[in-house]
Length: 94
Image (cartoon, rainbow, N blue to C red; front, side, top):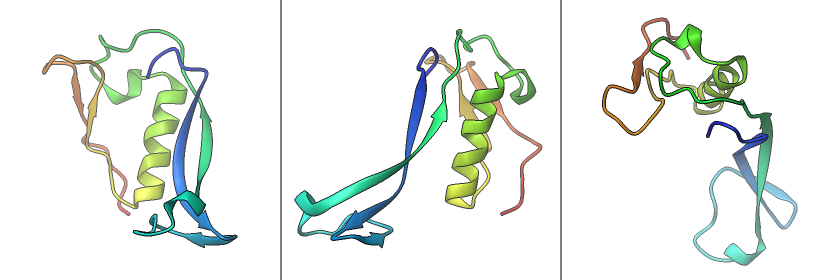
């Protein structure tokens, strides 16, 4: 996700003007996703080994995911290799 100017997170949906948390099984063509747009970050993060070293925008993305899910993010992948994984010890309680 590096080098994207913005990142969209779907927070909920609207169906006929009503807020819903999950898309319905029927009437998907009338279901509209609603996004929260966050700033992206520039540069490669594949060599980052600690959460604190991530760009500010990447950390804000993780915090927003935690806020929406109401769960801590404890594992963050920063690349395709197994060793490109950050394990967070300093998690929020939700």
